[in-house]
Length: 249
Image (cartoon, rainbow, N blue to C red; front, side, top):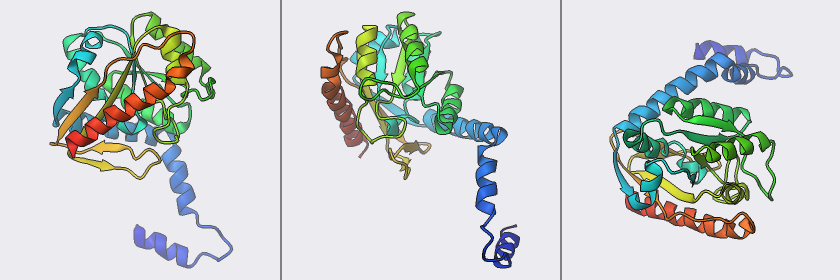
């Protein structure tokens, strides 16, 4: 197959653009391929997380929310493949716990949503707000606010969906302030993982490692003046991430 493709490329007229990359790109964008990949990656992550021996740092900060108290959980985008383990823990002690995760409306975001939905998480489509506005994410923001009012949990990656890496958008502080729910800074790492070459340097766990989940003290963000709390939130996320990295080093 590869030999035939290479041979065809050699005899293609020079003015004709290569077709294989275009065909492959279209194939990868097809609905059934996306669904198959989401299933495979979702099952792989379930296996990798299940075979990892986990330690929870900051259990006292997570305990109220593990018991069902609503919160806005925040973590950098790179931790996304690891964080379902935190809610696996929560649902083991509090069945019926509902978690809503904000993901982008872009095709990449929809794909991520399909993967994490396999962990029983609910997907809200939108983007983290920058400069107090959401980029096509008003519906997602309203969904998250409604979920928090109903007593559900919400998770958001403040530097998503496309960065800059570890730079928090204003939406995370705005959501916590408007909802009146505490913000829980989180992070995670494993001793066996691959760091992808994506903009966020996403962490892909490998099986049979040791992992750490970090929950920092919650931050109470007021309804008025929530903008002033964005540096504190960013610093808390950086500290939680540094703690996780040091543990897994």
